[in-house]
Image (cartoon, rainbow, N blue to C red; front, side, top):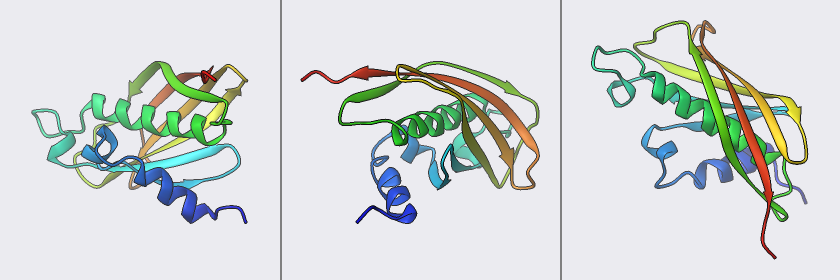
Length: 141
């Protein structure tokens, strides 16, 4: 019997133990046929010195959700996935609540993938737009 959506999300979050995702409290919360959504709390753990969300934390959220998406939609028995480039344009400051990153595929090739990642706040305001390129490399046999 295939895993349920909840079981897949639980497994994705479980493998984040003792990683940057756990440190930043990034949690995978939803996915569909071509997207994955993660959330991260905005608090002093992810602030710049002046008390707003750090762009590097936002980029870490975006890369995490995009890389997880590439993993979920790949045959991990044959390949492993790595991020190869990320860009981020930050358009709004956030000081509290959560930010949500939704990764969707612009290109889903056998070797390379390109994802669009929109980061929004609790009120669905756009915070950042990111692009992530990933590569699927063959596992050594």
